[in-house]
Image (cartoon, rainbow over all chains, first blue to last red; front, top):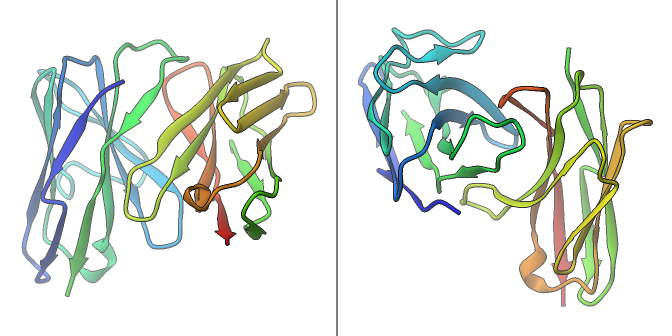
Length: 116
Length: 111
């Protein structure tokens, strides 16, 4: 398994501001992902965090709004920029040890964001 | 578009009883199917993962089945406990690491 921590666990922010969420894994992993889970809904993949290069974003998500860093194999950050109330959601980091399709994806505890 | 449909949306069962959750998918090509348990306020936790060649897999009181021909899966919970109250999410993967998530079934176990 993998032990994943996220900071902060929750935050309440004003519209127009930005928040950076940190994801730390207890061991090196190949794949790191960022998901969003809006209230009452399932998870939506925002992007794949690539070590040493730009993240790969899914349709509907752009780098200017959700800049991502991944400086090494155990750490990544997601920034939610210029926030609006529509960004209120749970943001989850997940990791996969290898790039094999059958490998387990482990999820962090999530960061609950409320934008006023 | 790859889709994962789960039923029922929610259910309530008495402690000690069994229940079965359903998942139908249209993801193609198919690599594997996973069931996750998500407690309120927590990230999902993997219960089982099955590939095309597997038709059943157990994890304690949780038993998952897969029929790759009909593109259906089920998750059976035996002798439910209060701690089983959670959302159960069916997740299907194509031949890469990207996952397609169902909306989940919310299970409430009552004493």
